[in-house]
Amino acid sequence: MVIGRRRFLQLGTSAAAISLIPPALAQIQQRPQIIDVHLHAYPTDLPIPEVANPVTGKTVRLKDGAAHRAACLAEMKRLNIVKGVVSGGDGDRLAAAIQWHEADPVRIVAGAGVRGSEDTPLADLSVLRSAFTEGRLRVLGEVTTQCAGLTLDDPKYAPYLGLAEELDIPVALHTGVMPPGMSFDPCCRKARASLGNPSLVEETLNRYPKLRLNLMHAGWPYLEETVAILFHYPEVNADLGAIDWLLPRADFHAYLHALMQAWFGKRVMFGSDQMYWPEGIAMAVDAVESAPFLSPAEKRDIFYENAAKFYRLI
Ligand SMILES: [Zn+2]
Image 1 (cartoon, rainbow, N blue to C red):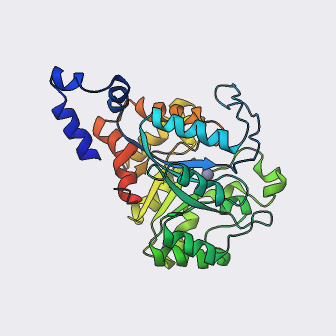
Image 2: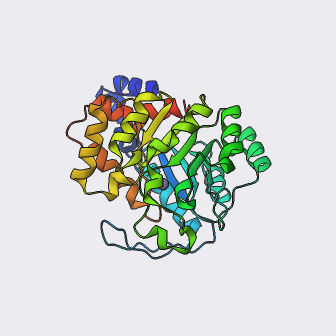
Image 3: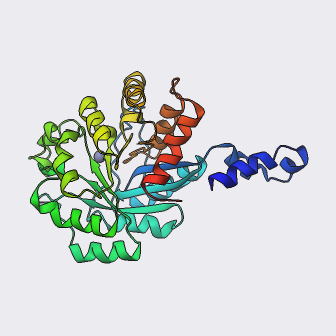
C-alpha cells in the first residue's frame, strides 16, 4: 500500500492525471496513510457515558457503543487511518472488538482485552485459541494487569502468554499510569501506579523470548525504564496512546523527543486511545504531526511503518 501510494504520487503529477481523480478521493489521498494501534470498542447497546472530553471540555452525545463505533470509523476514514487495532473497553472485552472487525474487516484488527480482576475475569483460553487461529482476534491486548493490581509476571497470565508465543500473536500491555483516582474505583481497588512501571515486564520477556510486546502509552512517565526495556529487548515496541492527546503538548513532545534521541524512531508507533471521544483520534494525529523535531521520514515511521512491521499488517 505504501508503494502504491508513492507510485500514485509520482504518476499523478500531470494536470491530466490529477483531473481524473474525483475531488473526494483526491482529498483522502493527500493525507498519508496512518495505522492507529490503540483504539477501544464498547458493546453495541452499552450507553456511552456523557463525559466531557478532558482536553476540550466538550461533550459529544453518542447514544451507545454502535454510535460510538460508527463515529470512530468515520473519523478513521476521514483521517486516512487504513488500519486500526481495537480492543474492548468494557463488557467481556472480546465481542465489541470483533464487531468492529466485522463492520470493517480490512481496516480493523481486533485485540482480546485481558484483565484478570474479580469483576473482569480472564477469557476462556479455548475461546481465545480458536479466535486467534481463525483470525477474528489477532492481538492479545490491551492487557490491563495494572488495573487488576498485578503484573504480567503473575502466574495467572502464563497460559495466555504461552498461547501468544505459540501462535505468534503480539501482546499489547498497558503501562505507565491509569486515569486519576483509578485505585478508588470499585473496579480496580487493587490498582497501583507503581505497577505500571515497564521494568516489571523483564522477567516475562525472558520467560517468553519470542514474545512481541507493545508497551502501550510508551510507559509514561517512566522514561528511563521504558528506554532500558526498549534498549535491551529488540522485540519490544511502544505506542503513544493517550499521552499524545491528553498530555499538555509540550510535555508530550518532550517525552517523544527523548525516545527519539534514544534512537527508538523505528520502534515508536502511533496510537490514539480515543476511549469515549472519537475526536481524540484527530487530536492525537495533530500531536505527532506538530512535533517540530520529527523529519517527514520519522513521522512516516511512527504513523505507519513501525506498526506495519510490528503487527505484520502488510
Ligand atoms: Zn491503556
